[in-house]
Length: 163
Image 1 (cartoon, one colour):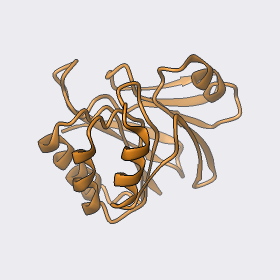
Image 2 (cartoon, rainbow, N blue to C red):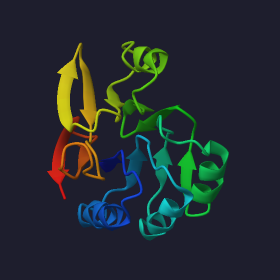
Image 3 (spheres, helix red, strand yellow):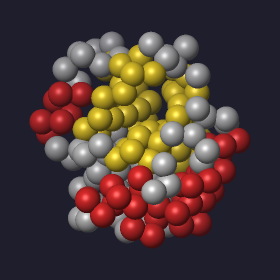
Image 4 (tube, rainbow, N blue to C red):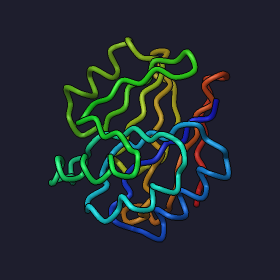
């Protein structure tokens, strides 16, 4: 199964729409969003996904209850600052990465995969037997590069895709 990974969308609607198209091209069965949606108006494009989306809040998500409500209206499940997801035999920790205690929990060895954002820098690495994936930033504000990532749960393999 292919899982789409996304983070740091920061209100950039045209790039959010491009990211959603890229996720659909790869025929993902699930999308994990590692936070920093920012505004309520960013929810609408996700209605086009046609697959479940699970997300967490980032450090720039001020209106968390409102975000949770508006995203649930498009079928997304925002679960606070940390989410545990089991998919394809993998135990996945999903967090934005800005809260040390949540990152410590994610890297405790209890999870096969950690999906995180916050730094805006795309990376796939192995650390102490844990596959750690940062899909980078969709918004392109910090690095000038817009990207998403994909996780193949059967092969326990992830890759970055620039938009």
